[in-house]
Length: 380
Image 1 (cartoon, one colour):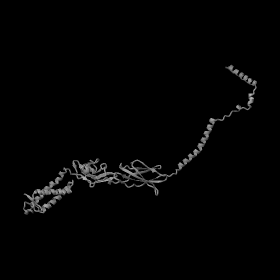
Image 2 (spheres, rainbow, N blue to C red):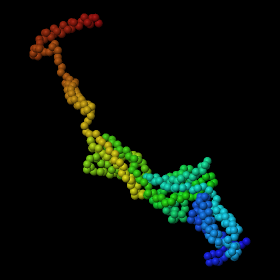
Image 3 (spheres, rainbow, N blue to C red):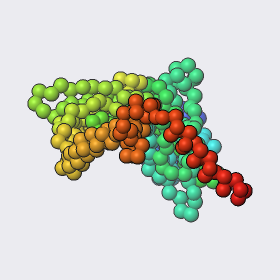
């Protein structure tokens, strides 16, 4: 049995044209609405089949031969429906053949990027397969790859593959340009289609927050310690004396995680500090943090310290003069001592009388002395 199709002009066409029309209708539906989800494709094919049936059967365009009287023959209509079902069955297999027959996994959905303080995290909804481990592959495409490298995709340095439904793409996003991102899931030999981020991501959209800071004092020195957010960050630190009309001082700090000296404080005054981040690569800064204040003690010394100073001063006033007097006396008796002669050695007579002693008395004294020595010699 041979079938013909009449166009709007009433011209007959052979069955090859019927296949071409069905094929074009399928391509139209699949290109507009097709996806990697097999259930979605079946719905698309079903809608296309209904449209085709309505167009060629219900309007009476399929007839046997050239006889228009057979348009309403039930057998013809049923045979055409069967032919259409067989044709659409083969059309349903074509998408699987086009993608290698492996798109049985649903693609990851709900792709989004959470970016805070230049830390970029790509997230998606997990693909759950019971009793199986799902791996994800992440690829990116920057402006350079899109314009000068024929739209190639580069695997992420940390997430090809990864098991969790998120990927840190901070090291991949190195320029302030739009980046396309895509993810696919793999379970064993089964691989899903790629799921692409709806809008390209640019790192200049990151959310900047003030850093965590610690304000301390060391004597009369104001010290601040800031959170380490990475090498791209600079910190604008503002500090001032807490009083009406006080001048605000601003200092740029690049050191991270190291205490920094801001300035010298006046005794008895309170000083406040606030800080915000600045990223030169994107030309943006965060809002200022809440101000933190510290107070310096006044010049009044504690009672114990004042008492100790008074006692020390009094000791100095007493001990130093006594020590000087004592040392003076020691030096005086050591260098120039005063000698007192006993009374037997003192000369009471006039020296002239001692000189005018008679010679006889001297000789008598000498003889008396010699005579007293003789018994001693005899004993020896």
